[in-house]
Length: 468
Image (cartoon, rainbow, N blue to C red; front, top):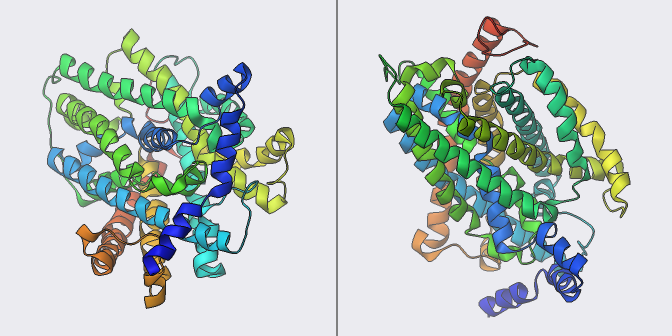
């Protein structure tokens, strides 16, 4: 009887979103066909492109730096381990979204002009205290995630044009990235997600092939790991790499049938691993310990038209990823000032502009491309996308009645609820001790070292002395 009830809920769920998709399909004018093709996405493929494109981003260029801190074997193992763990917690978030949305639709709540966000899921399932915790960690992570994209833009363009210092480039790209206020939601990232993934794919294989063709530099050494600080700093950068699902709920909400999201993030992670493992391994093999003082892998490769192409493509991709990270912040701000449900795109865009200002400012204060990833990974990602989803899932289904009436039942191969709870407890304990504890200590020691070495507001981080 319970299973019949669940099936009924799923079959009738997300009705208004599916109807919206049908309405879009019914208009066959050339203009609407083009709009749908380039602008209005909501399929499983759109979600996969969004997850894959958003997950790898600029961190592709810092993973060789992490390998120099961890050593080759640990670097590979941590990528596989955190890739699997990230996919698991993305699955938990998707389950909680389905549960929340189903409960609200039973209450006849209409989400037609409202984008559901992670903190609202926590509020609906666990109450206002969990909402506040989720809101704090999610917004802070996305804020610094946007900061990192801006820092990466300045770091990359410098390798094509060093006539301007990195701080000046940060000013310029801050203004460029502010144009993302005009992109309404994740529905409208269809062509950008697809193109962004092609760009990172090119860059990853460029790093791999160029490093192998360049060969090992004279006197190359592979000393990692040498210290506990470097080891756990590298590990938390990988934790950050596979913790990009702070926008999972918004991506799901942009789907016509969000219940199909369950395995998308895992498939996206598998594809991302085909980019990150070869590129990081090849660059570390070629340059070894030199990466310890060059957090951006592009800095060590010779200047060619292929490298310049990779830089330009990554710049465009970082603009896209900035939009991915910032869009949920735009939604939160819109809801706070009560313009979220307005149909005026221009009014919403103007209302969003204040969100970009602190991001711009923080990118100028802390331009430490590489070390800032590890700090964000240990202090924010560890809670935002690992610990909080695992705890929230356990508490949501703590009662027997909640487990019996759950819309999504745990997979049988895992041992149903017992296996699920054991997995969640492991995730919480591991990430709290290794990610937040050791990782937080190591990344903050390294971050303070960067401040002491280069200073806040440094004009050109890790630039050659004669260029600074």
